[in-house]
Image (cartoon, rainbow, N blue to C red; front, side, top):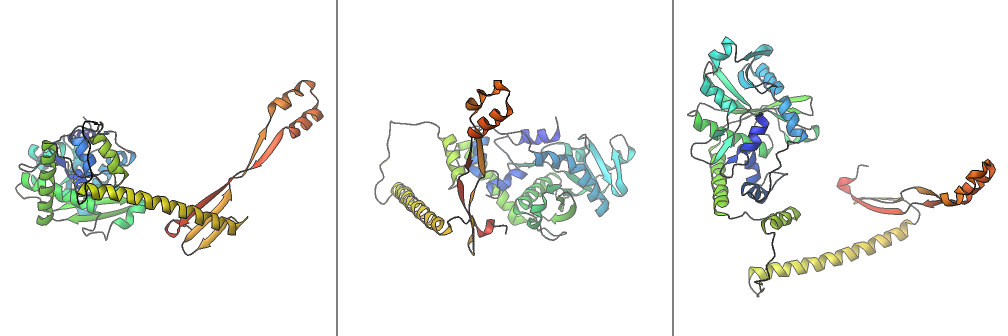
Amino acid sequence: MARLETILVAHRDPLVVSASQMAILAGLSRWMTPLELYLEKAGLQPRDDVAGEAAYWGSKLEPLLLAEYAERTGTRVLGQDAAEQPILFAPGGKTFSKRTKTYREWVPSDIEGLITKTLRHPTLPIMTHPDGICLAAPGLVCGLVQAKTAGHWKRDDWGESGTDQMPPAYLLQVQTELLVVQALTEGRVSYDDVPVLLGGQEFRQYRALPDNRIAALVGTLAENFVQRVQEKNPLPATPDKTGSRALQILHPGESDAEELVAEAGTRLWTATHQVFETRAALKEAEAAADAAAVGLQEMMGDVTKVLSPFGKVTWSAAGTRTTVGWKGVAGVLETHDPVLYASALQENTTTKQGSRTFRVMPKENDDE
């Protein structure tokens, strides 16, 4: 089974949380909410195990990043090659496969398992899959490596190279990874390095040291989450459309057997009142926005753009549209007379100006 597929399969386990899933539980993920993760773990929502483009290329570039990390740090790193076979990366661009004497001297079977197996904490419901294992000497583990790739537009999310100033979601992932591997190696792992390739052309490197406060948070989040899954006790929904979609999955049916009465002073009354109040306010705001737009359009007349300190407003046409009534033209085609054809084509062709579209672009979205 391919390594990426192995990781995706392990993520389905309802009684354990992976290092990369910890960011979801902490509310740091842009892609999934804690309730959505609960739905997957509880088997209420199928997991999409198809790796996206970013995950695919991150996996493909991983051996190159590990090799570069070994070269720049002078460290020997146990990882996997492009064929997903264990390999030892060494400075000078050297690599040693399982068939070599050097590999067998440096990598005993228990250490090889750190890179080929799913690693689970002995007491906490957390697991991880390190990208690389740093070796200080034959058979002596000293650190971990978690290789990353990111788009150029994400470069500002990463701080100064050599620090631990990485995006919070990644910092939580490597701290979880440290917690698991430290427990399995009796504390021999003292750091987790994160080499990252930004925009496909800028290499940076970061280091996370074990943090007991984050470790305590990881343990608490994971234990509470797994307990909720076991007890079928969903996490709260996020107050947005994502939360609404998750609740539809969680509560798919309708029941006429009972009805709730919102009595004054109760949470139900407060929530119901807020829904009606905000819907009314939204309706008033939409009417006010429509009235303001009409007023601005009257002032613009035939002008297509207004610039202001608040942003840009455009009111432009989509262009002209030409339509030919071919039924009127078809009658003269058999005459083979180009003059009659041209005349019929002109008489049956109409050109209409495209309708104008009113767009409001706030300052933060204004490129000019």
